[in-house]
Image (cartoon, rainbow, N blue to C red; front, side, top):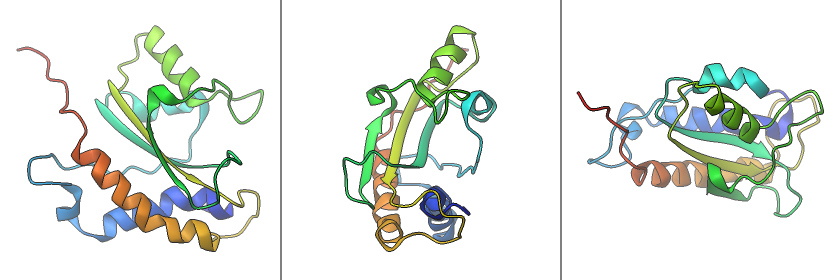
Length: 157
């Protein structure tokens, strides 16, 4: 949250929590959700994801293909890149693929909500205006995705 727009997921988490516990149930037929913050990346994400059945990941991205503040929502399977932020780090698709190959109990359902960032290099708190304006839209998208997410898998007794 100190690298300008890279903190958008933290602002979205704050907004989700500010609505109170009742907002954690997107609709009467669905289950509550947990807001969890993490600054981890690469293989460290395995510890964050292990043991959860369904996960919605929120993050800032800079694709250069959308104006800053654009809210993108897509299933994990639509992620096309295996690359991480540097040659020494791996991206989420690689982490999931290798974790599953290794038998780590990872989510059966993953969804991504990403916000196109403008500035992720400035060492300053606070979002750029376009990204700040996207926070309520992102919260609405997250609630909608969670309301339509599949039910958790239940192991036979």
